Amino acid sequence: MLKAKIAGLGYYVPERIVTNEELTKYMDTSDEWIQERTGIKERRYADKHKETTSTMAAHAARIAIDRAGISKEEIDFIIFATLSPDYYFPGCGVLLQRELGITSQECGALDIRNQCSGFVYGLSIADQFIKSGMYKNILLVGSEMHSMGLDFSDEGRNVTVIFGDGAGAVVLQPTTDEGKGILTTCLHSDGTNAEELAMINPGSHGGYHLGTEKFGYPDVNTPGGVFVTQKMVDDNLLAPNMSGQLVFKTAVVKFPEVIHEALDKTGLTTADIDVLVPHQANLRISQFIQRSLRLPDDKVINNIQKYGNTTAASIPIALCEAWESGKIKDGSLVCLAAFGSGFTWGSALIRW
Ligand code: UT7
Image (cartoon, rainbow, N blue to C red; front, side):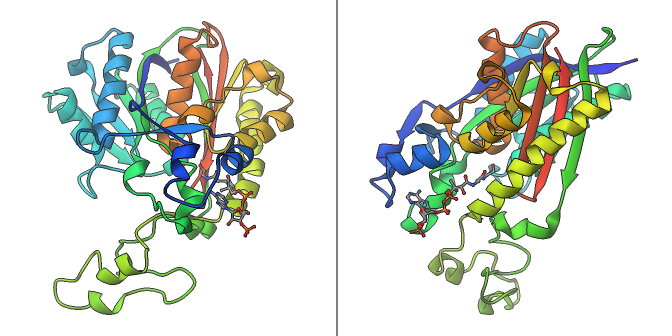
């Protein structure tokens, strides 16, 4: 029976470190508040003059491809997860293909928009393609350049202090090794609270102000339309918004639930988990999950302290760091879990 395994992995974070202290220059916040509520000490911001979401992804991808022991031309499918793409369209998958210099038109590229769960969703898609025999070398990337789209005024502080930039990549290949590879993936969604963690403008609604007027700003109905209106700029609507407490309360329920679901499906228990890599949403959320699953400190990977929340990139970056540090060994049972905007959430169990 064919399974998918992670054959190579890599990550990239930009050089520029932005401390909590630096953020206090732009908005009314404090190192103490940020650390106490989120655990974050610093994050990285990309260089806007020479980096984009897809160039960061390419750095991570080159490492993953090299570690998988293949050439870039052997990649037969690209899956790119991001909420902060280079362009509104086309998606980052083809930009990454071009950046890597993959000239083979045999390679397909798929972009997925599942925010914090993007990597787990991508892993599940890759798993199905590999198990079916359709592809042999899938490049899966999560990359985010949040710093270009955040609101650095006091109004945006609850969102802005959390997020950072970075990229993580894996190469997936088939394996027939007994018991090894991706054992299962679980995916879920519930659109009820879609706007509670979202960047709503610009969009096909023509301007949407949460809590006040709904669809269609006055200046969008002229022939030709106006995608980004002056009113959106004036009303400061071109940034993400988040109901932090709702996200927090839902996340601490859904994370353990979806991890138990994966364990139940495979006949395993929490005691079998060697390494848990949760999406790095908030250190307090990860600590809550750890307590709920009764896992010891050394089994849970936390790096949000130095990178913040990098959304689709957070799991592959943390996974790669854990692997590089020797925490993930041959035979380790690795559990990935994510929750975020949508809301969407998911988990994966991998026997390394
Ligand atoms: O990947 C998924 C992405 N999102 C998440 O996982 C987010 C989950 N939620 C959270 O992490 C937390 O809800 C936050 C860290 C975002 C906020 O923490 P909180 O304990 O829920 O704070 P709050 O939103 O209830 O705000 C408490 C106070 C408010 O002031 P008042 O009304 O009590 O005077 C906020 O205005 O903290 C204020 N506040 C800040 N103060 C200093 C909000 N953001 C900041 C800030 N610095 N950055």
